[in-house]
Image (cartoon, rainbow, N blue to C red; front, side):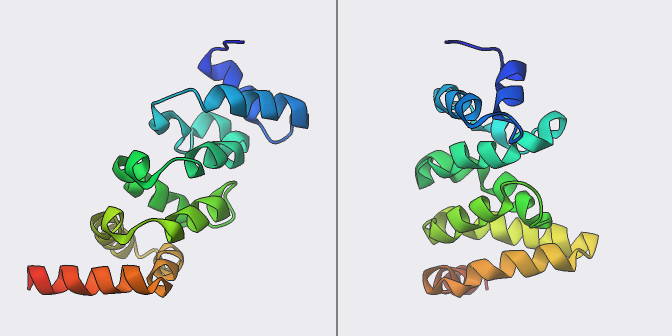
Length: 140
């Protein structure tokens, strides 16, 4: 079964029957360009399933998408946000340090304390905290 991207997102909608969502997830896993799954604004109710596809990928595969994944934490009530948070918490810190630094600056500019709060959960990972400390020492 091959479907176009719009049909795929309709099938990924969490209101679809489970078997339709499962078929869509199987198709979605074949797509190499993960950017299409980063909160497609036309299909908000597919975000939970998009997050499932994203979260199955390796740290190396996700490396270039960490900024977009961190944007998901702007509102933890968005579909898929908890899955993305859990995946970010498991990532090796070297894949996140620069993206977190960038997104913290963005959140500060926007005065988005909720977003800052959710990103701060990543620091509870000692390896991540240590990596941030090392990064700070290098740039000092």
